[in-house]
Structure formats: C-alpha cells, structure tokens
Length: 324
Image (tube, rainbow, N blue to C red):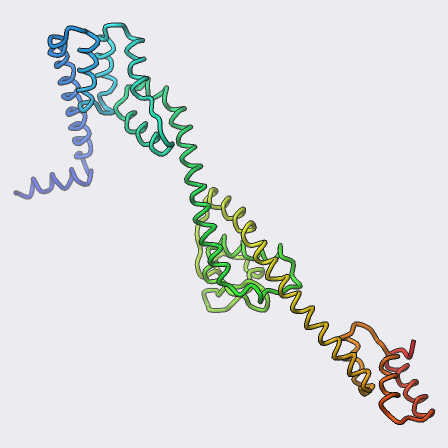
C-alpha cells in the first residue's frame, strides 16, 4: 500500500482533516441506500400476500435491519403513506411495537435501542417515558450503591479501635470528624490519636480531623458528586453513631468502675491514717474534702495526746478547711 493510501486511512481512523466530512458523507449515503432498498422491496411483499395489512406488517418488520437513526424518518414516511388503514393507524401500530415491560433496567436499555430506529415523532412521544424509566434505574443504582458503600464503610469503621475515642467528647463531634475524613476520601488511612479521629498529611504528620481545613492536607483526596455526597452525609451518621456511642458508653463504664475502685481505695487509706499532706490526692479521688474521715483515721491509728490532736486539727483547717 502506498503512502498516500496509508495517509488516507489514518485520516479516516482519526477523523482529521477532510476525512471527518467524508466519513459522515459515507454513512449518510449508506443509510440512504438502505432506505431505498427498504422502500423498493415493498412491492414484492404486496404481491406475495393477499391481505394488505399482513403484507405491510411483514415488510416493515423485515426491513427493520435497514433502518437507523439517519433514515428512520425517510423509511417511516414511506411506510406511513402505504399503510392500508391510514396514517394514524400506522402510528398506533408502531406505538404498540415499542411498548416494553419488565424491570426498569431492561426497559431503559430496550427502549433506547428501539428509539435509534424510530421516526422523530415517536422519539418525542417516548422521551417522557424514557426519562421516567431512567429515573427509576438511577434510583435503583443509588440504592445498590448505598448498600455497597454502607457495607464497606462499616467494615472500615469496625477495624478502628473505637474504644480509644475520648469519652468526654460527644458522639456527634466524633461522627462529624469521621464524616470530614470520609468526604476527603481518607477513612481507610484514618487512625485514632489522643482520643480523636486523625489522618496522616503528605509530610507524614498525623493530624486530628478537627484540625484539617484544606483537603490538600489529606493523603488521599476524592471528588464527591451530589449523589455520592447524599449517600455519605446520610450513611456515615447512620452507621457511625450507634457504633461510636456504644464504644463511648463502654469506655465510660470502664472509667466509672475504675473511678469507683480508686475512690474506695482512697477511703480505705484515709481510714488507715494516711498522712495529712497526701489527703489532697485522696480527696480528688473521692470527690470531696472529707477532713473528718482523715482526722478519724489519724487519731484511731496513732497514739496522739490532746495537744497532738489540737495541732493536727489546726493544720487540717489551714490545709483543707478544717473539720465539718
């Protein structure tokens, strides 16, 4: 093959130069020839069937392979003009042929396929139906996407040590931190540092989510479209809230048990005569300045005379407010 022909093929393949117009012209000519073939064959069908309706119907169905978006109006004009029962009945026939049942996904696919071979008047009639079916399909896809996303998100969240979250921080605040990381596409890189959700920035610095303001600080960033945003802002709180709330409650229960144990130990130490200069630590654990108990412990566990007790009473009054 010479270079000129090679250049010609290249232009046809890439759509460059005049080749684009030539391809368009070629396609239009091919469509016109198929339309002419379809119309010229009708006479043969009329001669083969005694019933004119049957002849027309068989002809039109057999000729569908010759119909495309470029010649659909041309072929239909001929078909409509030759339908034995008139123009409107011909259109009613075609309307019936494009009625499709089944699930929305199948209906949308078949309807789009049919409309590529339909005349413009039918396409216009079918646009509302196509939009309606398309909306149903989009909604179904959204529901599926929501279920898949929820499953993946829940698995990622369960893998984090939620019991390490700061129980003094409200659940809603933790959820908002998590939502921020998820919107920025960083949940898989998230960790819990000092009781808060955090993520590593590009320089390797680990930052809590509440300190992140610029998405550029996140290791992984993603573009969130409106439908995805809707899923994120609904699914994240829906899944995260009960999980985080449960983890925080467990932490609070453990802390409460620890506090009670520490408080009990402090009370026992006071009863056993804890030195007065250590009472402050014990009082912080039991939640009150129980000077009476401290003095009682010192008196019962030591051999003090009246002067010692008076001195200790004065010291306790000076340090902790005295006996009640």
